[in-house]
Structures are given as C-alpha cells and as structure tokens.
Image (cartoon, rainbow, N blue to C red):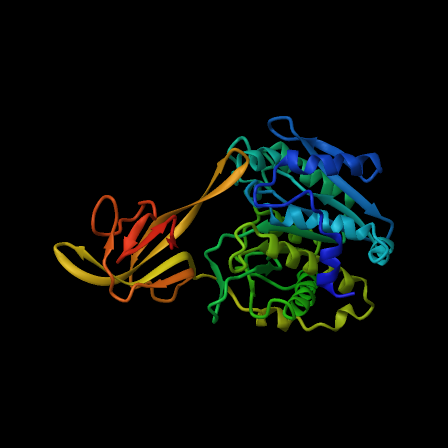
Length: 381
C-alpha cells in the first residue's frame, strides 16, 4: 500500500489544527493507557502529567519525543497517526521488529500557553546538560532507563525557512546532530546520516526539492547533540511549511511518511548500503522566506516618491484555543534573495493605510495598494 494511502487510513481524526495541548491528546492517551500502552513518567513544572507510549516487542529500541517546545505541534499529530499504524495489520512487522518508547508532549505547560519555553521560561533544548527543569530530567531518565538504539528528536520550524538553491519552502528539514566541536563523523553519527538519507529518498517522490539539511553547529546543551554524544544515533526532524498549509495538516502526513520510511530502512538487512555522502547532497536549510512580499509598491519616503518592496510576517497569537495568524510589516527594501509564500506585484501602484501613505515596520498589515484593499496581508475582493 502507498505511503499516502497508509496515512489516510491511519490519520487520527480527533487531533488536528495548529494548537495542540494536553487536553487535545489526553483522551486518546487515556484510552491507550487503558490498553496498557501508556503510562505517566512524571509531572511538568505546573504539575501536568508527562505521558509515555510504549509498544512493540522487537529487539531494536526506538525512542521519540515531541513538543519539547510547546508551540511546535506538527510532529505530535503525526505521532498519533503513527500509533494507529503500529497497531494495525499493516504495522505488524514494525511492532515485531521494534520496541517503541515515545513521549508525545514533553512540555505540556508550554503547549497550553503556546510558548517555546516551559513554565519557568527555560528552553528545554538548552537544558540537556544542567538538567535544571523537571521535564529535562524526565527525558534524560527515560533515555537512560530505555537505552534506545535510535532516537528521534521532533520539532517544528518557522515559515521563514527555505531550501537552498530553490524557491521552495523547507517542508521537512533533517539533521544528524554533531557530537563534538569538530563535527566529526563516527559510526553513531554515520548511522543517523544514513537513516536521514533513507527517509529523504522516499520523501522526494512526494515533495521533491522540499526537504533540507539543518545547520550542524555543535551545542552540547542541545538534546540531540547530547544524545549523539552518548553514542545513540539521533535524528532531528523539523516540520516546516508547505504552501498554504498554516495548520500543518499537509506537513503532518509527510512526517508520518518519513517515520515509516526510516523504520523500514532500519529493519532491512540492506540498510548499510546507503552512502553517507548523500546526506551532504541534501540542500541546506536557509532563512529565505517571508509570509508575504509586495513588489514595486509606490509610496512617499522622506518627501520623495519611491518604488520598492516590503515584506509582511505572521505572528502567532493564542486566543480562546485558537492560533490567530496576525500579519505585521517586517521589512522594507530590495528584499534580494528572499521569496514570499504569497507575493503581489503592485506594478507601481500607490500604498496607503489609515495612518498615512507609507508602510512602517511593526504596523499591522491592513492597507490599500491602489484601489485594492488588503486585510491581514491578503487582498480583499
């Protein structure tokens, strides 16, 4: 069966949208707990349970964790799709080959408030050595107890990232984290690189030229670098933007496909055949996008009329269990080397808004270009 058919069959319908916090996933977790597949590892700063999913009876142990950053929810959704697959007839081979240990939401306090950091305003991905936070200690203890053969560190990245050499957003970015300052490649990191190559080869059939390779600068305080340093092959996966997919429901399915493809490679006796150099063939992840770009806009600046470009970026704000994407002007100028997820050619038409006759950085993106009205960045017909 095709990977997309598998996704459509096993997608978890109760978990959707961008805002995912504990109350959205806990009903499913409690049902899995009744089945003996979920337990509580410990509690967050604010006393919320941190759940772990365990399944499978295979010799190879795989550990995954998601929403270490509370406002990065796409991979959490994909994990619940993955849980459904593992318990299916089609997923039987994976359950026989692997034992899974998965923390679907490491930072439930941050998830509820839609913040990157935890309730103590600490970035858990910079706390892997000092272990000052209960969530960091829970994760580290779980790794030590489970002794995984592979680790998946699952995140989201912003819409600003693109694939170097293209005008495509980076829908999925990978990294085999460094384990030392020299960015050396030992057998552990080589295994992680080959795993990424296997996932990327499958993804190219679905999203060609929309995957990228994240920067591998070493920081031992980051969890991926720490675990790689411990001798466990570790893969970072960043869920990024697909055109028009601000709820990340399209990206979700490609995360699911990547997880399945990688595990199939791991269980294959031919897995050593992949070339590590193909990892470096994956294009770099670059900061090359704005949400909106408006080109050839005319307005008055310092008592002179000019024609130039300006960019608008969304800010994500939580309001009553919904993420509001609010557009603000973020840059004015030539904007060379960057693209917009939405682009508009003003062809020299005049800019105006309620406050004046020129765009200003930090101002909400409600304006006119000629006779066309734009609200929250988009043209209103």
